[in-house]
Image (cartoon, rainbow, N blue to C red; front, side):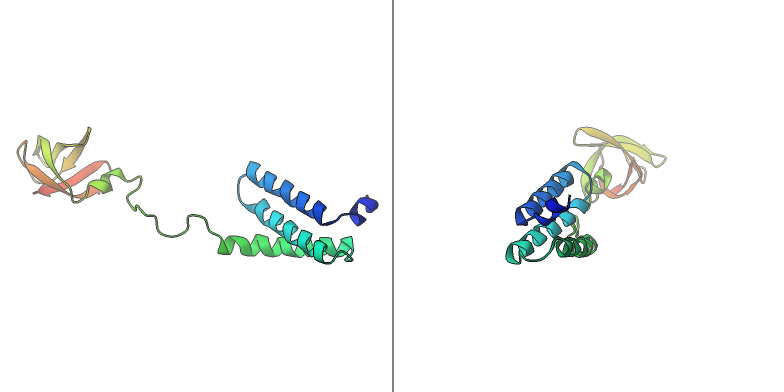
Length: 148
């Protein structure tokens, strides 16, 4: 085992990094990516300074692994920021501000409106069938409307 560790060169570190990247592909999360990047950096250090002992190489790998595992997620945040469509997966919210025709009259505050290929329950002031209504809000699976 000692002979193997003493003969570990930059190719060994890069193969180790490749193995960590493969594990990253197979395992959920982003932890092994940081370890793989640390191994790549150690491979370059061993390429430039081959006279370092294997103990120093592993110490550098340990330090770089901890630094990259702690600092990496802080600076690399996939899909961070605002969602380009704030109404995504909130179908009712997508209809706010739109005008539709009542499918059934609103009686006692409840009726129906046809939206695209579906029918939605609506709540609002009593209005006759065929009246135009504007969606002003969403309450659960019911659209809140007012006369347009």
